[in-house]
Amino acid sequence: MALKALFLNCTLKKSPEISNTRALIDKAAALYRDLGVETEIIRVVDHDVFFGVASDMGEGDAWPEILERVKACNILVISSPIWFGVRGSVAQMVIERLDGTYGEGDPETGQYPLYDKVAGVIITGNEDGAHNVAAHTLFNLTHLGCTVPPNADCYWVGDAGPGPSYIKAGGDRHLYTNRTVRYMVHNTTFMARLLSEHPIPTNLARLDEEARKVSR
Image 1 (spheres, rainbow, N blue to C red):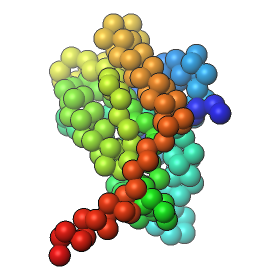
Image 2: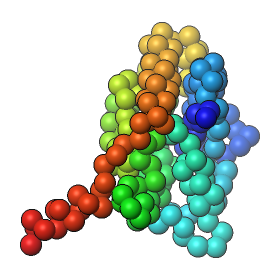
Image 3: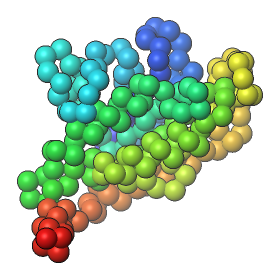
Image 4: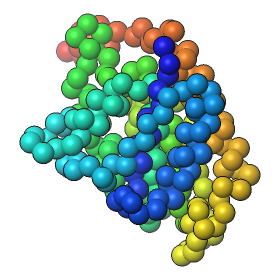
């Protein structure tokens, strides 16, 4: 079975406006395809995703369709610009919407839908904050069930303050970014293949019951 990597591009810019985050995503996507991994890119702001913490916020909410693609992927890469030193508002909204999957545990094991999926993160910005965005986003995804391998983040940041971003600044030639995008792609691919052959066996439902017995 072919693996699939899904990128959620959390740029604040609607299509067809140029997205620096998309430029770095394209580099990662090409590397995934070289490894035989299928790729899909969704620019979240092009869809009418409602604010909330449920998987379906009612009529007109575009999130349920995106969530089905999340559930169908093996590798989930949240891709966000940096704003004021933290992840952008679209990325925050995506994490908030993924919170709804806590209530969709497997009937037998209790595992959340993101179990056995591998997480990665791509970040662009012309100011500091890449480590903040990576740390919080990857940690959030582990709580939702994702597995995070080593070196699962890739970022580019320019000089402090206003200035050219990834594309205009020639970020595609930046050694550190070119190195870490390869680390991320190869490590997430390896982990996804491992999990596809050896799914996590933890029975959360049974452990919940054990915890209840000693918590009364």
